[in-house]
Image (cartoon, rainbow, N blue to C red; front, side):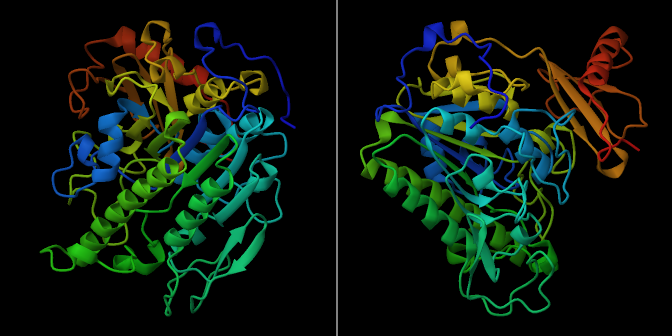
Length: 455
């Protein structure tokens, strides 16, 4: 049962096109989240070297968001924000660490499951470990296969993965394997990404006659940090083997191609079962691009027109792709500003599950935008991020304005994102009244945490 069930404050009067999820005609929802994929890594977002035809096709036929943001600039807090709808000013897991969701936390999966959805998660969880309340199957998912620990998820050739709450042996060999299963394999037999995607496809097959929520947080193109400059682990380089690029960049290109291929496979499986007319596919990334495993985010211009990367609260660290594909969209591009906190109320509204939403969440449904009903689309007053590494950073966006304090002991900087997407011209001295307003928003958005503190 969903904890702390209350009536939703969202008004869905104009959006009653869906029947309850217990009815087999309710919309299926597929949410694919790449790991460390940059805003500029996709052809539909301006990538000039790497090709992503399957994802680009989703964008061409669906709706592409230009101003969508991850929950954080690193993995675990971003996933906590996505699952709970609470931003990093007061969610539980605000940084990378061995922390677990609690039994009282309410996730998107629980909200949809209460409305009758079958729920499955396949990939990297990162917000609940073995034997904890944070296990996906204790947080609303009927099925799980993949990595619980984000440290282990660096390793693409692990000796085990988790099915539901139990370890499943994988025939790889990892000498000096770490406590959490991390390391570098000496015998590489089974590539984890391929195993995970195959499980996700099987979940579609098994639930084709019933409304389902498929959460697919893949691990690529994250690096295996334990492998140093050989961290872009792939089974083969394919067409990039003879490219005039450094080896890590060949590996990165192969990862992006594999990701694109498998997004295409998910779509094909949906179409095979005749589900395309009642399935929403969402594709995004958990944060900005990385410079790890020998790869450098600038090599293929992974952040596109943005400045910054993973671990920054500059746009390059938090602005990510979002593509929404389904027949109810008018294909095109939207500049509607949204972030990971908005996914919970959006999916609840589309799945007729708003009565199961938790008491507290920070997001606002963008279902009207997905339903081509933009006249009824409300906008967020502001978006907020806090990051606790390197002494701490925080940022807030309100309309066209972005204020950022990075690091925390520095002066607040102010940017006009409509004219300065690269955040190069600090307007703080010219607009002190805006700096005062946005600084106050930062203060009101942040709740102290005994674990996550600014230094």
